Length: 311
Ligand code: GLU
Image (cartoon, rainbow, N blue to C red; front, top):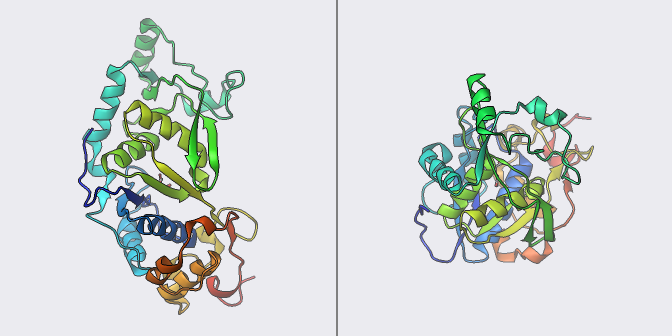
C-alpha cells in the first residue's frame, strides 16, 4: 500500500470536506472537534479534499480559507482525491485479484425494487449480480449496461469501537467500489486514503456511523490498521433536521455579512460544547474529549446565526 509521508510517527487525525459548497456551522463544528481530538492527543492533523464527486468550482478554496479563518491548521499539503486515482485503482485491482469483486449491472431503480435478502439490512444491496454466470455477464455487457464494481463481502455485519457510541455493530453488504461511470466510490477512497496517510483517528459527523462497519471491514481486507473512531453529534435546525444553507445565516460568509467575526462563530461553537473560548487555541487548552455533549446542537433561529427579523 502506498504511504503519503506524515511528519510524525504518532498517527494522525483528519478533516475531509467534500467541496460541494460553503461549509456551514455544523461542518465547522465537526472540523473543530476533529482538530481538537487530534491536537490534544499529539497527532498530526491532515486536510483532504474529497473532490471526486459533487464539486462546485471555488468551493474547496473557500472551505480551506474558512477553516484557516477559524484557527484550524493542518500538517503538510492538502491532499486532493482527484490526484490519487491510481491508488484507488491499485486497491481495486488487489481486491479483484483476490476474487473479492464482481460486476454489477443493476440500475438504482432495480436495486430499490429488488426485495432485500431475508434478514438483510435495510437498503442493503440484495446481491442480484453476485452469482451471474459468464454468459449472463457477457449478455449484459453487450446490452451496453455500464457495470459498477462491487465488493464480494463475506460478512453481513461488522463491529467497530467508537469513542462516543461504544461498540457499534452494523451492516456490511456488497458495497460499490467503483461506480458505473468509472469513479471510485466514497467508501473505498476514504479507506484507501486514511490508510495511505497514516490516519489512525477518524472524527466526523454521526450521520456516517452506519457506513463505518463497511469501511472498517474493507480496511481489514486491505490489510490496514484499525482506526479510532469518534462520530460526533450533528448540528440540527429548529425542526430537528440536519442544518442546511436554507436555515439562514449558517456560513462564515453569512456571518461576516451580519458583522460577526470568525471569533464570534468559534465562541458560539465553543459554547455549544460547554466551553467559553474565542479561539481554537484557547479551546484546545480546556478541551476534554470525554465531555463532549452526546446530543445534537439545535441551532435556534435566533441570536448570532440569523439576521434580525427572521422568524
Ligand atoms: N467527504 C466526506 C463528507 O464530507 C467525508 C467523509 C469522512 O469524513 O469520512 O461527507
